[in-house]
Length: 470
Image 1 (cartoon, rainbow, N blue to C red):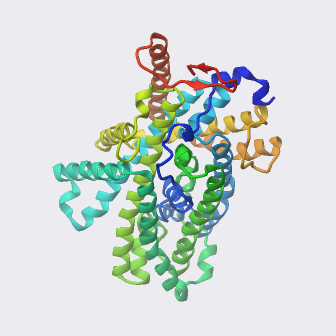
Image 2: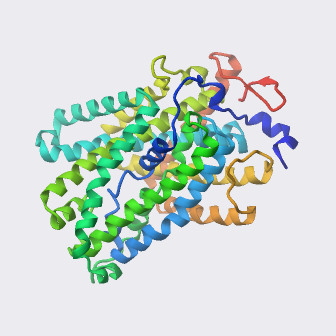
Image 3: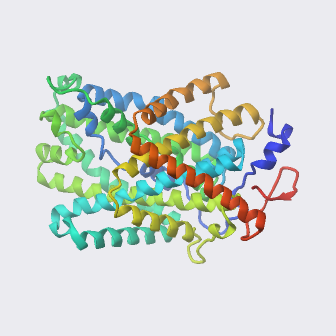
């Protein structure tokens, strides 16, 4: 049944486009900055791929980064391309869930994805300080470390405040500088490569760590849908998004594989040494300490890029949720100078700073759990909209019929379920508390609307009638 044949669905789940809300004279994101923002949403460079070798050996690590994109990254990117071009408004996945299943699911999706996003963001300033402290040991602990984390978070958040277009071009620069040493290392490594090392299943006596292996692949090739919350800020999103996602998928996979082929083929070390950051050690073995320092400097730049891209997504998610009435209207306020969602940036930054000072290993695991719940709801929204609303105009359409789309979604969904099944009791508890809080927040917002305590954005349905969405 199409959306024209189902007025109740249209009534409970409105769409919005940023075209009607964002001033026309604001400069929007173009193709190149968008590609690199997507890149930093997902990867930010080959930093962090090394544990796959430690967990399962060179051959399986190489096969993992060759095959896993087809069963996880490509489906997620295809869904993002179709739904972003069909519903090109800020809010992204929140808008999709709301359109498919109504305001409650939209709100719950917003809770899951926002909390997982801001908790993830908190790790990047800490990562920057981890590298800086190698040069300046004073930042190893105590108040200097706390001040450094706070000041770096505030400085990076201010850069985000200056505008999404600026952030996009900064992402291009950061990617070029942070990836350059890996290109050099790969070229210098060519004469030293021994192809027989690529087919090694690992050292004898080293047990396979499948949990580490799959988690490494998952989190290095994830978050393709985060960029959907920026759809209202993109120039001609119906044309730009599919191409940007296509290029970003290829670029990301290549940026992982080339250094991995180079280092596994050129360097022979104990398998247990393949921890996060081993690429810097490999660079010293292959070319010298100068390249090691460059890669470590690149890691700091990569963390900055990841912070900026993901903070942008979280802030514009809040803006988008205000535009469709899930949040009060004042959450959608923009800066008079830069037209950025300054309140969304402020809220995301405050939560990020709070999490930065916590021992948040279990909290991060819980955030990953919430993200997995959000992805299951996203897959369900995609399939439901294809089935129930086939007449929605889709400038880009995944070229598969519904049965094959179900198969396409079932494979990554099975992987998500596996990750959630092996979670600890603490993760279940924290995730449950966060989800219950999200449900409570939805009910509170509904009460605010009923009592008219605050103003909410109003939307027009397909027939032009004005009504509230909650």
